[in-house]
Structure formats: structure tokens, C-alpha cells
Length: 502
Ligand code: FPP
Ligand code: MG
Image 1 (cartoon, rainbow, N blue to C red):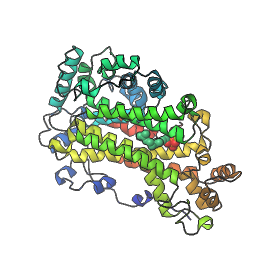
Image 2: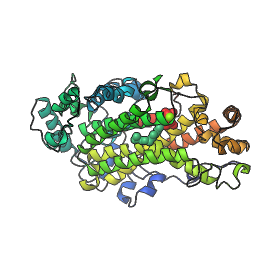
Image 3: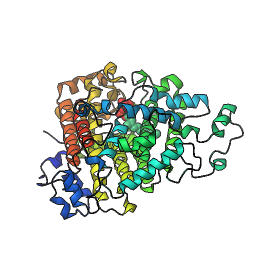
Image 4: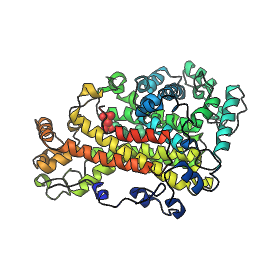
């Protein structure tokens, strides 16, 4: 028997026959009113510019081959490796996050920044920055938006304290209210709070940020969104490592193993608080709404994972039609796993890649109807890439060692009682896995036996195949955007997520 996970249902559907702005199949469901005039455009910049009123005279950064300093130079080499491509940006991101996380309390300061010291993959910020570059310039009024942002940056760089309302570092409440002091605060904390903007000032950079807006085609608000997203991701890792009893992360001792569970949880909360503060200053309720919903999604996904594979039921096999005698996972169990995968991992990527297009001018209140399509494209790309990413993660848990991963591996999920895609697929081939899954691999030798059965099954291969389906959907979504180097880099990231080794 070969039961398939939900996405397989998409396989048989006919792909749209023509054209650039014809939305990929999955997006057609999301887009309520496709604009027929855009359906016949060819996949080129001119198609975009001519199809969209008011855009033809603009120069979308997304479409200019030499537009980005990040993408300039030996772009062929760079494009093969977006990690190298955005290396300088990632350095800036790390130093900005250090500033955003500054705390007067030494312990909190240390723990909150701990996971940022190791060189993470920074997948999420890279996706946001590349999606920004791939879509900036499409919405009308881009030049004005960019020039206003550059002017605000310039004022700040010149030390002008009377910053304009557009500045992402500008508090909205008076410092006396925003940073009112706790009387029992440590002296060091008081000095920190006496300069409330200090933690929000970007690190000095050799190139002025104001100048770089024109070179990189990234708005400060989009960079900040990338930083916020990474802070949320790291907050979730701090909590996750407590839940998963993880001893290592990023090839180093985990935060809980170094600082303890309580401080790790509090540090995660602190990251969320600072991320929320920065989020409030981006000036978009639509973005706030999306990111706030991600926080709920992360928790929902984690709780779904913790509670087992069937919603509302205690046992993993409840609802599977006969407890441990069940022959294999039901569609309900697969659906639950896929939903959990979206909530736990893909939601953050999907909603933040969508959010950056809002900052670039595609917001619902910005009066550009076609912005809805751009947002849906970004969302579909992020959603499918995120699902592919987590599926590969679940596969690597079986196929890679802890040393390769820099975190627990070699079937670590089984030890946590978790049945992920490789185990669910293997269950179809080895029904005896059902009983082990039901008792969350708590029996003596369960983990070893399950690992053995899964390695003999096609579970890992089928998980990889499912990840490939989602990677393909992510790449198809990009076909709705004009050709650009940033789009190629996004495409490569969706492709390369399948072959990553850690
Ligand atoms: C890593 O999963 C964990 C996540 C992707 C999300 C965890 C979410 C929470 C703990 C909910 C709380 C959320 C916030 C925002 C504080 P994994 O264990 O599969 O991956 P790993 O092997 O890298 O640990
Ligand atoms: Mg974990």
C-alpha cells in the first residue's frame, strides 16, 4: 500500500498552461480575483512593467540585472551560493541583532545573545532579503518610499535627534514612559536605560546605510524585519531546546545545558519582547498582524507535536481504527503531521516573506490591487520552502549524525517520542511500528528497533520525495515574479534545501 501525504493530491492537477502572472496552482486557491490582463504576460520585466499601470516608467530593482551590489560582481558564482552572496548582509544582521538585544542585566544580555554568536545558517533573513530584492520596485511609489527611507537614515547618521516618523529606530512613546525605571533595577541596567535608543542604533558600518539603500535595494524596515524574524526563530529555539532536552545546538553546548532551563525560557521571552518592540516601529499593522499570528502558530505547532499525531486524542493511534492493530497511518495522521510542520516551521518563513512585500509597497492599504498577487506569491514560496525545509530536517534526523548536524541527530526525534515523516512512511511498510509509535517509543529497545526498521524502509526516500514536491511548488510560485538575480537566488535556495547536509 502506498499512502501519500496530502501534497500528493496536488500532483495530478494540471499546471496553468501559460505565462508569468498566471499564479501557480496552489496560489490560484489563494487568489480570489486573478486579473486576466496579467495572465498573458510573458515572463520578463517588460511584461510586468507593461501589464501594471503606472509601473512601466519605473525601474523595478527586482528586474535590473546590475541593480544590487549584493548581486553584482561575479554573480554567476555568487548566485550558486546565496550564503556567500549575502555574507556581508548577514554580518550586519548579526551586529544589529546584538544591539537590539542589549540588556543592562549581564546574565540576560549573555543568554539572549548566545545563539547569535555561533554562525547560524540565517536561512530566514536571507529569504526575506532576497524576496525584498525580488519584489521591490514592483509596487508604484517605490522611488518615493526608498528616498524617504534614505533621507530618514541620513538624518540619523548625521545625529539629528528630531527624527522623522518614518524612522524604524524612533520610539513612538516618550522615553520617560517607554523606559520608565524599575526602582529595584541594577545600576548597570539603569545606565543602559538612560540611553534608551542605544540598543536600537545599528552598529557603525563602513558604508552609510543611507547610501546602501540605493545600492542594495533593501529598505531599513525590510532589514529590520529580517532581524526580527531571526530573533523570533532563535527565541523558539531557546524554548525548543528546553522542551527537547537538547544538549547541543550549532555545534556547541545548548543554552539550557549552559545556563539552565529557567534562564533559557526567560531569554527566549526577552527576545520576543525586543522583537515586538522593533516590530511596532515598522509602521505597518498588516505586518504586525502577520508576525503576531506566527507567534501563535509556533506555539500551536509545538503543542500539536507534543500531544501526538491525532488532534483531540491522547494516543497517537486513536482514530487510526484500532489502536496498535492499525495497519498504518490514516490520512488524518498524515494531515496532522503536515499541519504541524506548517505551524512549527513554515509559518514563520511564509508570513515573513509575505510581510516584506508589504513593506515594499504591496500592503492592503497601499492601494495597489496587484500587490495581493505579489503577497500570495511570496507566501506560497515561503510556505512550500518552509515545509520542504522541515521535511529535510526530519529526514536528516535519521540519515545524518549529531556531529554532522551540530545538534542531536541519529534518530533523536524517536527518543523524544516523535513520529515524523520517515517513521510514518515506514509504518506503512512495517505495521509493527504502530505499537511503538503509539507508546512513543517508550518501550525497551523501541528506539533501536524503530531506527532499524525505518532504515530498512523507504521512509527517508519518500520524505525526500515529498520535500522535492514542495520545493518544486516553491519554485513554481517564483515564476509569477519577473526575472531577476534575486529571484534566481531564491530559486536556488529552494533547490538547495533538498541537498543540504545539516
Ligand atoms: C525546532 O524544531 C523548533 C521550532 C521550529 C519551533 C519551536 C516552537 C516553540 C518551542 C514554541 C514557542 C515559540 C516561541 C516563539 C517562543 P526541532 O526540535 O524539530 O528542530 P531542532 O532539531 O533544530 O531542535
Ligand atoms: Mg529541537
